[in-house]
Image (cartoon, rainbow, N blue to C red; front, side):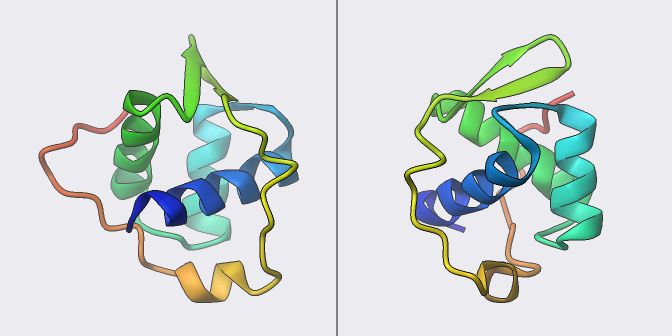
Length: 95
C-alpha cells in the first residue's frame, strides 16, 4: 500500500465519520466494516500516517491533518483497496 492509497483510505474514513475519529472506531470501520485489512495492519497504517503527519493524535482520537473533503475519492474505492492494507512489520501498531 503506497502513500496515495493510505491518503484515499483516510479520506474515505474522515468523510464518513467526521474530522475527528476515535482510534477504535477507525479500526472498526477500516478493518471490520470496510475490510481494508486486518486490525493490526490498520493500526500500523495509522501509525505510518501519524509518523508522516497525515493525522495527529490526541489521546484516543485521531484528527485529519489534510483536506480530506477536497480529495477526490472514487465510488468503488472499497472494492479496489479491499484487503490491501499490508504494512511491513517494522512499523509498530498504534495503541
